[in-house]
Length: 339
Length: 279
Image 1 (tube, each protein chain N blue to C red):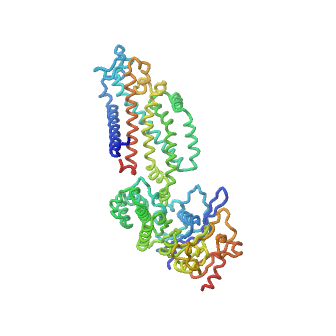
Image 2: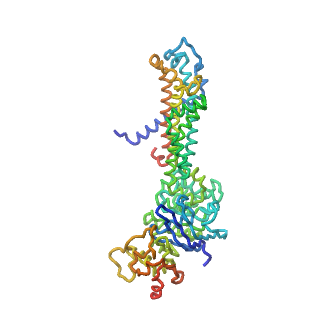
Image 3: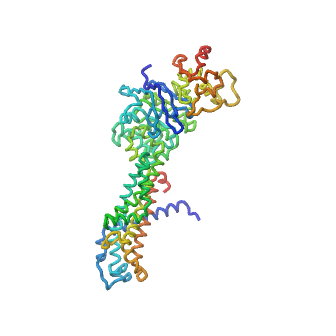
C-alpha cells in the first residue's frame, strides 16, 4: 500500500463555552490512502462534521476552537504539509485546488445570484488561472462529467432552477473542478431521496476511479458505508471507538456501539447472537452531554455489555487484529474467543 | 377583486415602463435645460408677477414674474443632481459600513453604535446643523444629506449581510479557497442588490423632498439656484392667489419621486433571478 494521502494523528477540537470546555473531537487518528475512501461514521454530535471542518480550517473564528494534533497531507507535488498549522494563504491555495469539500445541503450551498457555470468557473479561474471563456468551457466539461443532461444549457441556469439532485451534482462538479487529491464529503446524500442518493454515490465512485482521489466520507448511513468505503472509523462522543477495513467491520463488529449501530439497520441486521427481531432495535439512552462526559467509557451508560471497570477510566484504543482497532476494555478477550 | 395574474403582470410592467418614460423625459429636460427653457430662469418681470399659464408663460409666472416653466426645467438639473449625488454617496458609504459591520462581527457593535447615534438625531435638524456649519452650497447640502441617509442604508445592508453570511454557500466558497475580501465583494454584495436598490430609489425621492425642506428653512442651496424645493418654499405664501406657483414644482417632485419608486421596484424584480420568470 502506498503512503497515505492524509494522516491524522491525535486530532482534538475543543470549544470554550459559557458552561465550560466542550471537547467535540478528542484524540482522533486515521489515515486515507490515495484512491481510497475512509468513512467517518457516527450519530449527530459525535464530532464527524467538526473533524471535517477542522481539517479544512473552516471553523468560524468566533468559535475560538482549540485544535491539537497533526494532519499530514501529501500534496500533488509530493510535499508533506500539516493542514492544521499551514499559514492561511497557503491553506487557501490548497482549498478547492487539492482539498475539496461537498456539503450536506445542496439547496443552500450554491450562491443564488450566479449561474452554476459562473460558480464552477470561479474556482478554476482562481486556482488554474484560466480566462473566463476557458473556465466556462471547463465548467461545461465538468457538468458533462457529473452527467448533467444538456450541460451547455444548464451552465447558464441559476441554482433555483435545478432540482436537489442536480444541485448536488453541480456541487460535485464544483468540488472536482480543479481535480482535487482529497475530497471531503460531509453527508453528501443525506438531503437527497434514495434513488438520487444511489446515483450520486455511483457517480462519486466513478470519479474516484477515474481521478484516483481520496475521499473522506462523513455519514451516519451505514448502508452507504458498506457499499462505498474502504476503511471505516466509528466515532462516538468525539472519540474513535472502532476503526477497521469495511468488510471485517461489518462481519465482526468489535465494539458494542458498532454492534448496536449495525443492529439498528432495518431489515438486514440483528443483535449478535440473537434471532432477527420483529421490532427495530434501538440503542437505549442517549449520548451523554459533552459538558459532563462520564469518567469512563463514553458509551458505558448505554452499553448492555458494560462491567464496573468500564466506568473507571476511558479505555485506550487498542489494536485488535489486522488493521483493526477498538476502544473497549472487553474487546481483546471478545476478539480472542471469537478467533 | 383579483385581476387575472397575466393582466396584473402586464399592468405592473406598463407602470414600470411609464415611470421610466417619465424619468427619461425629466432627465432630457434637465440635461438640455438651456435649450428647452423659454426664458432665463432668473429673469424677473415684476409687472408680469403671478400670471396664470398662458402661451407666453406656459406654466405661469411666480411672485417675481419669473417664468415657471423655465425655472422647473432648470430646477430639474439641480434637484436631480442633488438627489443623484445624495443617493450615490449614501449608498456607497452605507453599503461599505453595513457590509463590514455585518460580516466582521467584532466591528459590528462599535460601527452600529455610531450609526445609532447618527440616527437618533432628527433628520432635518442634523442636516440643518451640518449646512449651518459648512455654509449653504449645493455640495454642502449633498454632504449633509449623505450623512443623514448613510445610517439608514448601513442598517439595511447590515441586516441583509447577517442573513446572507450564514448561508451555506459562503462556507462552500471558502472551502474553494476564495479569500475573504472576494467573498464579500463577489458573493455577498450581489445578494444584497435588491435591498440596496430599494434604498437607492427611496433616498433619491427623499433627497428631493429633503432639499426642498432645507431650502424652505433657508439652509438649503443659495436662492439664486432654482431647485424645485426652493420654488415651492419661496412661493408658498402666494399659493392662495396663484395655485400654479406651488402646483407645478410640486407635481414635478411628485412625478419624479413616484416614478423613481416604481422603477426601483421594477428593476429589483427584474434583477432577482427568482422573479425573472414570472415577470
